[in-house]
Image 1: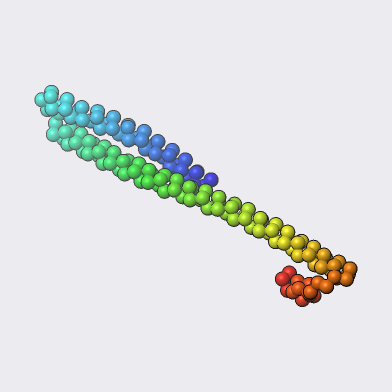
Image 2 (image 1 turned 90 degrees about the vertical axis):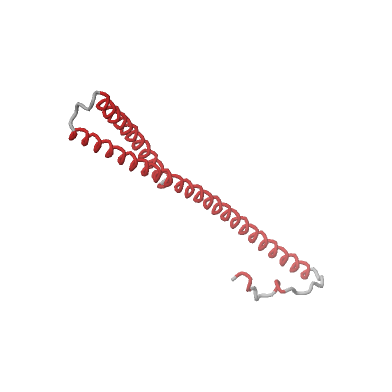
Length: 147
């Protein structure tokens, strides 16, 4: 949930920065139009105004470049978070498979213990009825397997 929260946050920021980028592109286009218009009118504005517009244009270009860098960084972060989410899902799947196998193994051990006990009972019954059944390691009182 933290990864998906970060992913949603990154996508939200990406959308905000894209909107800001578009706004900056519009401002840049307007500034460029103003510069072209001023040149076509015959440079009615003073040198100081031209310098201010050039500075504003340069500032907008640097802002646009910074936003592009931020968008690229967020895209990389989204990619990394997506990879982490996929890896976490794979780990969770493996954990659930391991738990299922452990449960199955435990069930089999219980079944095997029941079978051993039943075999002991059958051998004891056969001996009780006079059958010559040799003692096995499992028939003795030294049952170390249950520890």
